[in-house]
View 1 (tube, rainbow, N blue to C red):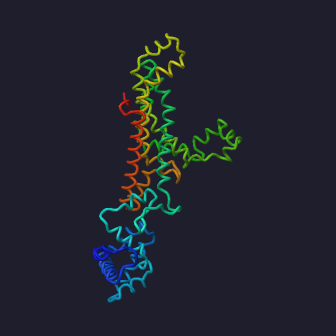
View 2 (cartoon, rainbow, N blue to C red):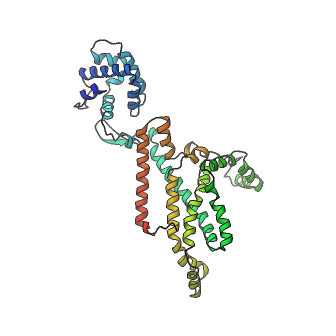
View 3 (cartoon, helix red, strand yellow):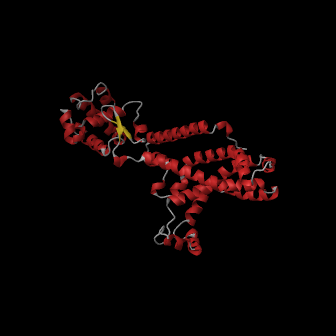
Length: 358
């Protein structure tokens, strides 16, 4: 809309522009209607003011039939939205080569006509919740993989080489299977009436959970937060386990024997002598798993419910469904910034130089 943009470049934003600006708007909309660009103009403005896309396309179609002014009256007669200061302020903001709109919107913020930044309405606040959900699920999966992987890594590191190699093959087996295949397998196992549900019936877990009031009837595991965390934990477990195992293999058994010979009990010697030496592997495995979990898309989409989608899912939706590359880019920037902040905090508290992959 070159004529309109040029006409409102020096507009103060206090009141609706005059006749010349409306004449420029009419000329731009007529040109857009001929080149079939009116819908694209409305699509961009609709990001900031919902329903504006239809108003722009209707105005462009009707104003094409108007031959002479006064243009202000003619345009406002088609739709009163053009008599609102916010509409013109949105056009002026959208005309800039650089805009904070996308970054503000994915932080549930908006810029008012006066230039001040405020929070969006409560019924439009979604992205902060998505960010916290992504961080929460990633942290929970990282914690579970650490709890499950640490004792397995210790067992592999202390078993005879032949037995450890056989068990290590079982740990590496998931790497030979596609992520999509593993996720699809979990979606089949967790469906109502599936293997997991039947196993809960056979073992009496369903009866016990109903007895204590956790369940009320049949268990529903599919498309829940539980299934999302379970599938992600299974997929990410080797990423946490292997760095810990590789560090444990380098720890000499003589350290524990020396501690025992000096009078330390097994648990105390393990806590004070062995475990601190495994922290570099723990740090590497947990950081690797956490960062990978932040970008999960397929697993939450297939086995998770509507409230389990993470940032990656919304980035995909912005690109492929909405065609809104600005919003997708802003979500990517927010995710990257959150990761860098956590990485910085981790480096300050633990020290990245202490992290080892083996």
